[in-house]
Image (cartoon, rainbow, N blue to C red; front, side, top):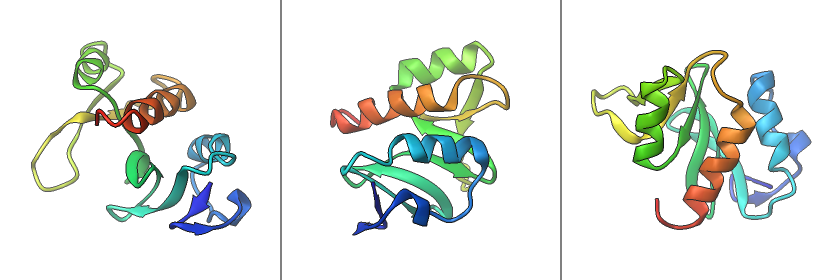
Length: 117
């Protein structure tokens, strides 16, 4: 993993939520993944595209719209609003205690890195 597009180690990543730290550490060996601030939040990118972040203390990932729809319908989260009133249809804020952050991050990584995002 690289930090802000520059070479670095995952232990050089600043203090983040322990649950999100687990996600960051899981991608530490991937040279295509970078860590940095995005939308004023700590997050992960693959090939320059955001796939997971912590926004206002909430875990947010980018997934295909049908998957987001299903997760929202199941009560596992809500659609992400970055704060300007425009709901992001391919982004979900995972509800506290709902879903495995690491599994969702892996799913988001696969989706975004496939280039269909």
